[in-house]
Amino acid sequence: MEDHKLYTLLVYSENIAGILNQITAVFTRRQVNIESLNVSASSIPGVHKYTITAWSNESQIVKITKQIEKKIDVVKASYYTDDQLFIREVGLYKLSTPIVLENPEISRIIRKADGNVMEVNPTYIAVMLGGMTEEITNLYYALDQYHCVLQYTRSGRVAVTRSTVEQVSDFLEMQEAKHRSMTE
Image (cartoon, rainbow, N blue to C red; front, side, top):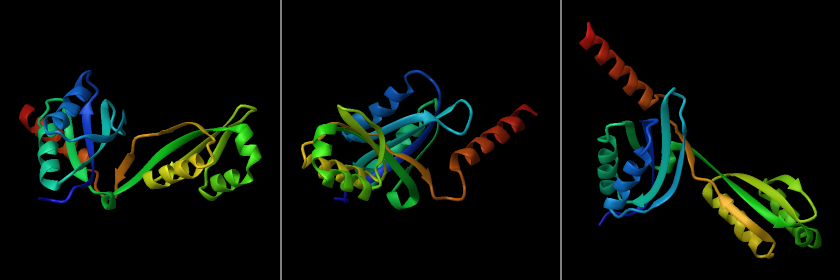
């Protein structure tokens, strides 16, 4: 049995309603849980980028990637390990102002983690931290020990490859060249 590890899939698709459902259905059919999902416009007009993380083994993630890429509106799908990507997430923490003011150690923890205070009012203090998943969850656990966390959320992963070549751009250029040669 292969070891499970966290994989990140970068999926590019046309901006078509229902494609997210088709993509997530592939994971459901293979009984692989999605850890995080982030969808946004990409640098290519009309193309959206899905950043999906899931714990799996390589043979399973290869099958999932191939199935996703077969979807008609998917332009390109690739999977990566963390060492092949630049990765960031954002954590937002809403903290009780009275508790934070009572205990100066909480402010030190926030500063040590490089958290950014976004707002302070008599009820709450809003803090933001950008970084790796572990850094964001570590700050949450450190703050939670003081029972000051009113709300907490973490974004899905955003990632770009470390490669000097942008696979989806190369793929689109090849498709365009193929289309031009067919119409000539």
